[in-house]
Amino acid sequence: MVPPSKNHSRPIFLAGPTAVGKSEIALQLAENIGGEIISVDSMQVYRGLDIGTAKPSPAERARVPHHLLDVCGLTEAFDAAQFVRLAQAAVAAVQSRGRTPIFCGGTGLYFQAYREGLGEAPGTDPALRADLEAAPRATLLQELRERDPEAYAQIDRQNPRRVIRAVEVIRLTGKKFSQQRAEWKSQSGGSPARDFFVVSRPADELRQRIDRRVDEMFQRGLVTETEQLLTRGLAENKFALQAIGYRQVVEHLRGERGQAETIELVKIRTRQFAKRQLTWFRRYGQGESLELMPGDRDLVLQRLVDSVMLPL
Image 1 (cartoon, one colour):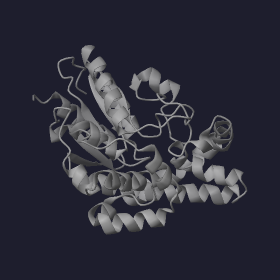
Image 2: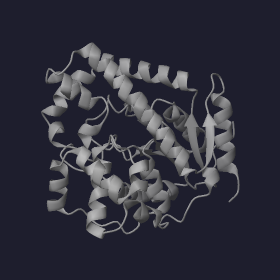
Image 3: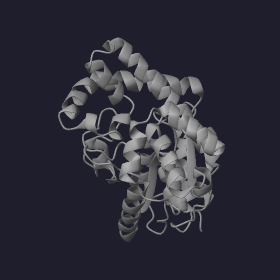
Image 4: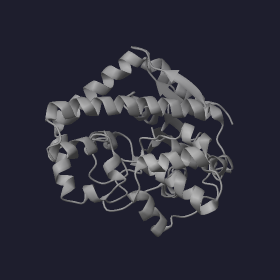
């Protein structure tokens, strides 16, 4: 393996679906090139959402410094603009130490926001947002389909936050949400596509990994963790409650289904989420696809190290 170098500190981006194994690759990459990890996960920013988000353990954080974990309380909202601001500060700090920032996660919007900027999106209107949050999702989706068919075709329709924001932007600006997104301009200086990698696995293997992870989460105490989070305001935070696992466990605790049925539902929702993540990254069309096959992790890691060592 190539020894660490302090002469190559431009960011590298490692994306992929949940449970694909990108976090362990990022850890090994960081150890080999002298890097620090910047989490690109819209739920790992929340303090307390640990088991259900597969947040890096204390031992993993001791191996390699991590950034953008536990930066937000359960009663707070977090968005792409905050991510970009904190990520820019983290990158500057990491590079000031002569180390390499390694972005790792599965929240595609955050990758895009950092790499391409936020454009001129309007701020949130409290009164309008309250009305939209009270409206049935089917009504909002119908409006989105009529006013912006392109956004309707591309958006994650199971994510209320995304749907609400799209309709909000349309109403506030009178423009299509898809048009606003297309007009994003780079604020981060842009990164060579060779520095962006999307990790994948064969579908059957990814499914098995997801199922094992969900089983382990429940064995480690996801139900107890969720009970504790409810006392700290989880149910009142519409954003944090969207985290897969927690929402289903909350429903279980309310008596809507048994634990065995809940575990199976979390597996289904997680597999659906992974599929949407892969679809998003394919449409994004940036960088190189790295499919992990059994036994070839060292080859993938060497490919990443070689990429970092290439001159600009």
